[in-house]
Amino acid sequence: MAEREFGRGGPRVPVIGQGTWGIDAGPRDQAVAALRAGLDAGLTHIDTAEMYGGAEAIVGEAIAGRRDAVFLVSKVVPDHATRAGVVKACEASLGRLGTDRLDCYLLHWPGRHPLAETIAGFEDLKAAGKILAWGVSNCDVAELDEALRIAGPGVIACNQVLYHLGQRAIEHAVIPWCRANGVAVVGYSPFGSGSFPRPATTGGRVLAKVAARHRTTPYAVALAFLTRLEGVFTIPKTARADRAVENAAGAALVLDRDDLMAIDAAFPRGTQPRSLPML
Ligand code: NAP
View 1 (cartoon, helix red, strand yellow):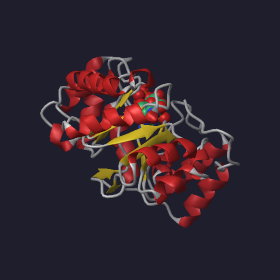
View 2: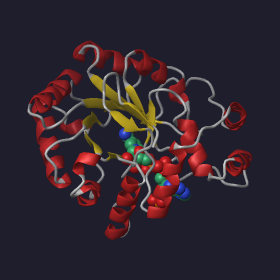
View 3: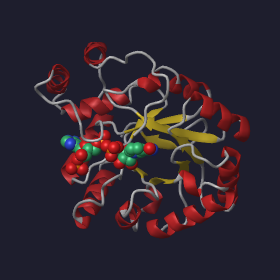
View 4: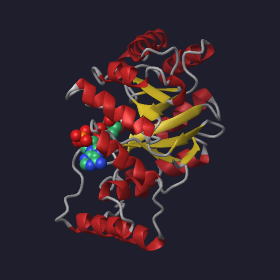
């Protein structure tokens, strides 16, 4: 499994991980089996959040007995993100996950509480060994600048942001900022949250052609494209074991110049939007 440093000086983490939003919508045993199949295939970065309903408990069941092999990430909702609220929310997440620590803890998106408060809570959790690192999510450059000013260099582990073939806005400013400051970029909703390009469309045909050349699937091709840039990770969600294995194949896939040009032409980056797109 291809892996890279998660933020400057951070641990090495597989470029493809597993999302868990909505994983509690179907049968629980199927969701647990999918996460375990993903772990077996090397997708050891698991992303969850207190906001994802029953997802944390399902993750807890899936990682039981193999916690040390997992890079576990959860998130605090902005309404809880006061200094004391962050600690309380994290402890509740740890309980649902059945673990004593998170590898990384994120602010789900910037909210009404001052960032300095949230960061103070993160630092309290770090000092207590309950989180090993912290990061942010859905932050544009101005918010990243503010976080950096408060935390200082080399502290923010990652920024988790929307990134799929139809939404490449982060390539304009967020990825360059993160790369310059040693912050990992974790792209979420790599399949457009269930609206993957249909085979009958121009883009769908391009993906199918590249996939056929590499004897893989359009989904694996999309994941390989989305992790082509240094410092960038992706976290597809599936509640199906076979699809978790299929998604893992994207990490071994190396797209050549012609593949990249064809995908880039079919799914252009577009101009920079005024504000950062998010779900
Ligand atoms: P996604 O990963 O883009 O797409 C998930 C959809 O794709 C599901 O319908 C899934 O169906 C399907 N799928 C997955 N693998 C497939 C495959 N190989 N073949 C065909 N279909 C496949 O959507 P997402 O859940 O929005 O994003 C991923 C993760 O990012 C989330 O789960 C969450 O952890 C994180 N996220 C973070 C934020 C944030 O604000 N920080 C926001 C959104 C998402 P099945 O499950 O039926 O396979």
